Length: 467
Picture 1 (cartoon, one colour):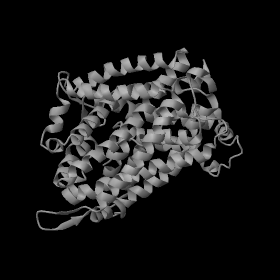
Picture 2 (cartoon, rainbow, N blue to C red):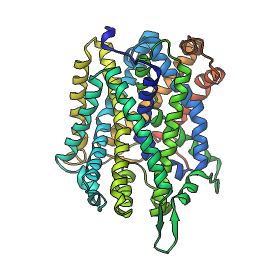
Picture 3 (spheres, rainbow, N blue to C red):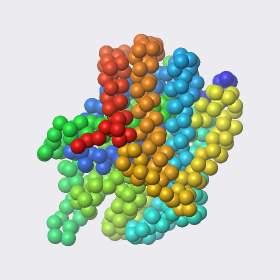
Picture 4 (tube, helix red, strand yellow):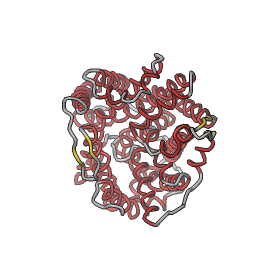
């Protein structure tokens, strides 16, 4: 394998911002606030924080260390450490390969709404049925998806330092400033309900921040834990091959402990601020009923209606909001694409240009199929977990609910009992860094993490159900 095809980050800050950009995606913005509001507000936040510094830290450390230790992408990294465990790397390559097409479709939706608000047509997006008519259209969803995919491809084809690192250094600070600005505005919103009650963003903040344990049962608490753990997978880009890929570009002299701590902080901070952005505004205009929605229905249906109720500034607020979501989607999509491209480079020893173009063609074909799944190829399939979906939902179920937990469990078993934790700890501390959570890491990777992730897998696939 030719090292000139791979590239590397020029410094730790580039790696941290790129990894944080991958972690800060749509899951933080449209899923985290909904779960927090539904699962006891501050109680969910506390559980998530505990899991982030235990489970999240363990899996993040493992994957980044595997990448730097082997200087390989996921497809070949595990095989380099132990040939018998190479199949984990194959699964870690399949996951981003399947995610990239439908993530670009969603990215295309975000790009469409950003365009609508920037051009002053936000009022139309708030009309009933607007989102449905857009995603079921013949051409428009495909065009926006392919534009989004092309932008991702352009960044990746420019290379690790000139493309991914440089774009992250530009986009991530802007994204962080936008998140803070939108959150600040959301807290200062006031709206009068039909019964005359004046509700402010600070009222919604209480719903979000104050722990609600009313009627909480052991089963309910366990569900909050599994919800938070599931969100952690979405949020930290774990078990997707991304962190192994980015870890392989980290210079040997970089302080890995410090870098991982910074990634944890950025991701958790943005997820927390996403809740402050969304929960107060949605509660002020729609009450608790508005907080019952997540995913596309929250971002593309509920929020545009709220923006239009804000008056003239709603257009500006909406444009800023969708610019922020677009940046978050873009940084995540770039990392997903890079995980596949890097795997092709390492496995087949091809140039970055050929690997990127080849993956773009494959992703474009599947992305078109995903778009057509809402149009001429529309069907409804009941998945094992009880949800009903189309092509996009099937791909999401296979990757996020089936493959990713299996990969995480297998990685824990591999590190905990085959490679042994010392193999990772040695890589993390090879520059003399102090690994203060060393004992926690060993216990988590060998015992606690695989058991809890197995339970998450059984729940997410519908095998184990809550009563």
